[in-house]
Length: 209
Ligand SMILES: C[S@@+](CC[C@H](N)C(=O)[O-])C[C@H]1O[C@@H](n2cnc3c(N)ncnc32)[C@H](O)[C@@H]1O
Image (tube, rainbow, N blue to C red; front, side, top):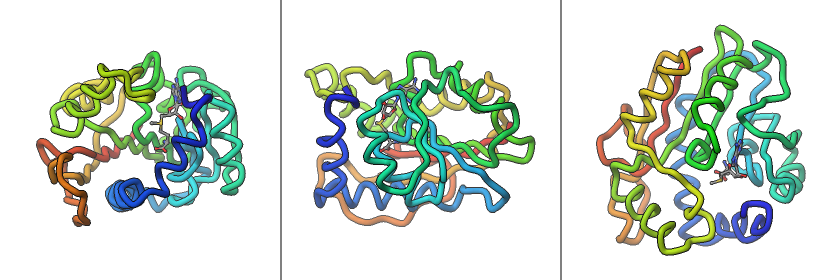
């Protein structure tokens, strides 16, 4: 679906609603980007908006069409699946996942691979939409109603994300949250909250391998 509808997905970020949600999520991820050495990789980079804005040089995705857009944003692109990363052990100083775990066939295997390619001092950042939030429930309902993107997503609760990270061998080292507002309201700017706020619609988890 991300292959067929790459332009539509990317164009959403240029809508007023999409721009604000992008800025909110970016502000939530930014404080958790490790200052240490790169290189840095986004897995599930799509059209590369987050990779470019966060200064991640490499973006991987199974869908070729959005990667072409990402390449135009000066992201070095690699086609592939997160469950089989074509990189050596300990290659990256940081790996980011932005709303990708819920689309992966095997999110636990993807996390295992992310851990393998991280340097010991590296960090994983996982931006997730918890199912135990009004936003997660809304997206899940939209998926059930046939939404072209969300219909293939499997949303997980915050606790399930934590368990999956720990199960893959990570230690959770930080969290920020945003979208504590209701998804039914017109979105407004909010400062990212330090910590994992129960019910927040977007939570960024930082973890060390
Ligand atoms: C909701 S999009 C997010 C894209 C980008 N991170 C963003 O936030 O704009 C989910 C992305 O995950 C990718 N994806 C799906 N399965 C994947 C897998 N197994 N490994 C890596 N990426 C995957 C999709 O192709 C899609 O580009």
